[in-house]
Length: 170
Length: 430
Image 1 (cartoon, helix red, strand yellow):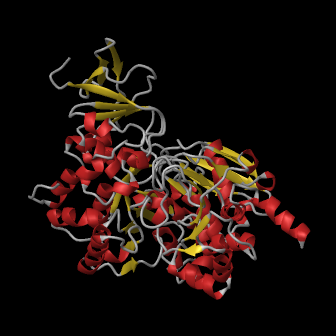
Image 2 (cartoon, chains in turn orange, green):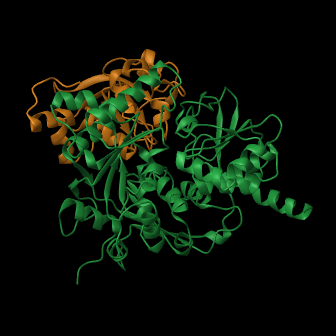
Image 3 (cartoon, helix red, strand yellow):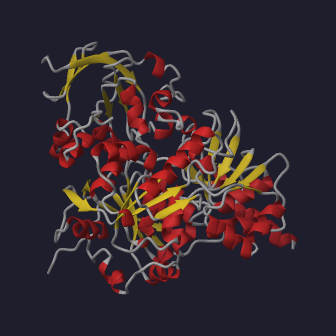
């Protein structure tokens, strides 16, 4: 395992985790921290209070379907989620996650991860390890265009460079 | 001879300044029109634009619509609306519609659409504009900030799924029923794909019905939904103050032999009204499978389900009838112009005499905001496009989706019922 690897616990969900579950409409008026406390509450009321920085979310097909609300990705990031793994992603969620620097990775291995498993992700090496089961899985690389953007620090950082802005951008 | 291309390829090639683009290719495109609303736009843009030290790349190409937190119900929503107004003033946005209706309905109502445009919108149902032969896609707030600052974005050229609808829709069956069937048949995982609709049933539709097809391409997971423009498109654009040329019809269409990933065919004449059970539009079935489900609320609202033609559908069922005891029928017309037209043509009195409660124009209950939300355990039959868990209020409320015909019939019966049965019974009684 390289020094770049991150280790955390797995939170495991099924198919079709939608943006209303990730960022419920009734809490959309709240700021990002307030909204994040409601993340996934409709299917897992304990998620926001138990997830810790560096943990991972694993899910099935169509993660992030629904609205364009970027808060769906921001809420996961605010709660400290280090990466989301899913069988497939909705396109707006995928773009939003990459833009804000939340790795969204295709992970088709059904049943490979159970809730609470210790997981290690080495993005540079393209490998995710289930420490609990002792098995490794390759992570399919993201398109180069997107890797470049993430390396630049996300979309806002790229824009900062483009416009020569000096201020730190939230 | 040039290789055949899909409409999506042609628009992206034009927007990318290339002679041809291929599916899977990532291209940088110029944005012709950017749209956002009070929830996705100014409140998320302003601080970032100020930090970048830039304004809008072209204020005349930016449309802002306050439709989510309207009208304000508390200090927070009032502040969001004020932020939006202040931004429009300070950044020189002339095309600002403050509480005039839902953004997707506002765009064609005010002549903003034209075939061949690349439209970027800060809302997932931006696909709605694809009914006019635009490449219209939804984006999140950071993407939209970059778009309004630079006038550019990147996109992956999509594969196209062609949906070919033959035949004619039967009584009390509508474009919404086609989409609920497609959510089941094509699924909601067509990520990064374009969905193009054609065939005689689509050609026969007015523009409002076509927008239902393009709107719910979002539910299919698509990048965009597209309908090739024709005389109906051009007439609608011109009648609403927009610009279009005859040449748009021949230019903005898929070529014979275009490389579709898949062609899905459907005979409209055999289609029954559809309802989608909680908590996904893909849980749809012929209405007969769910007849008898009792409802607490019937909701006619949203970009997809409260345009003038939708109110006409509802009125055709509600005329001379009363909403069932214990059921509330809420109607939120999609725009101020829709309300005005429905008042003039006699539709509004039919609705209110039946017992409908009129709500302000806006996204309202469909987006989990404003009036018309549900309590724990309540059941709503709705003309909207999504029924995800917790979307319209309590997480343990149930939302069933149907056409305006189906919602109106449910409001009268107090339960899910085939609108065709209700209309036939009424004819027998007459």
